[in-house]
Length: 373
Image (cartoon, rainbow, N blue to C red; front, side):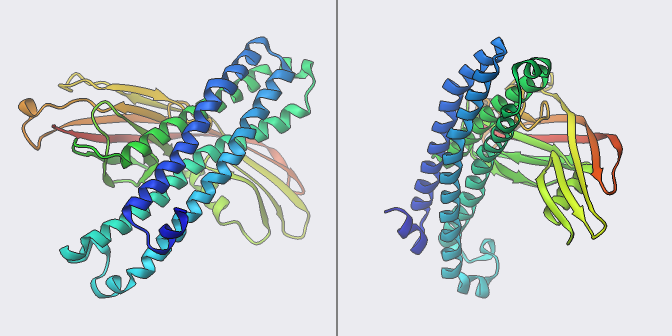
């Protein structure tokens, strides 16, 4: 009953209901996976039991696949609402230009539009987070189906690492959902100001994209967590991302992400299979400075996509007005650098020996300003 009114006449209240319900569904799925399936998978990892290991990985995607479908339905509903709202307000855009330029009496309408735009971005972020877990668990299941116990034992270190990445991905999903839900909850505390002050790095803050040099206000009350995800956009990664999004006429993309590109090329002379995969990707953070008058809690973690340290979680400290002044703030610069390695393998008509590359990630700082309250 909520979907039709949202599409026909979307309002800020309806948008909030849509987002919170969708995030609650994903949050519950993440909790179930962590509390039961990952616990059982950990036991199978400890005992190195192939059958039990395989069963628990299967259980994960049996949970994530329907959750992913429901999340995608939420995204499509939000997109329909956004398109309906844009059509309703098209005359304002023609008359006044972008919403931020509309006269004060029309700013409530501009705010409603911005809320629906935000809902699309955040629901997509949550859907994509559970989608990665779904894809990874299904891929791992396919590999495990072909193994016998002896082979599993010999290659256990690799499978154990992949299982840990699944667990990291589940925790990343849970923290993403928590951060997104917090941003929709009323708060008396002033919003944070976050800036991407990096070199060739893509940053997400609580699931929202923050381009290089951009700054945003983020709603995060005292003692809540802000989650920052970084991806170093090195020269090779840019190639992987661009080719994955824009394949040539004779290219068939099999897998595409910031961490891997797998494709077949057949220009008439025969098929060539190429794989680019990142590995040993590490981000090193400076998470404490003696100049910080109020020391926050900072945790470095992994997203589950392969890299180590690509997430930093920042617990918002209390910045007292009587110490920093009304309207004052405390500046926290979370700085990092990193490195990533790539391996390319090519087989088929134009086969070649494996090729390895190493790249430095220049990094920089994600700057968080916490205002006094």
